[in-house]
Amino acid sequence: CFTERERCAGVMSRASGKQRVCYFYDSDIGNYYYGQGHPMKPHRIRMAHNLLLNYGLYKKMEIYRPSPATFDELRKFHSDEYMRFLRHITPDNG
Image (cartoon, rainbow, N blue to C red):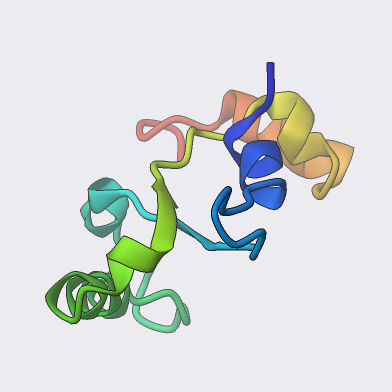
């Protein structure tokens, strides 16, 4: 069984043999506040998504809703110290 990311990497149009663009979007992205100085701006992501829909570009793409990363996936990119922090942090003790 392939993950969404692996499937996307191998997507080919059967008719033309051309690779297609894969696009990951989750409407829940705007439900988290990243902080005033953080470069992630959920409204920009929503605006880009609306442009893709309104211009019909989505018809030329494979669109996937991403799944949350597992702890094993996060460990590939984050230190053990940070992973311990994530395991123990809660809204009450943060």
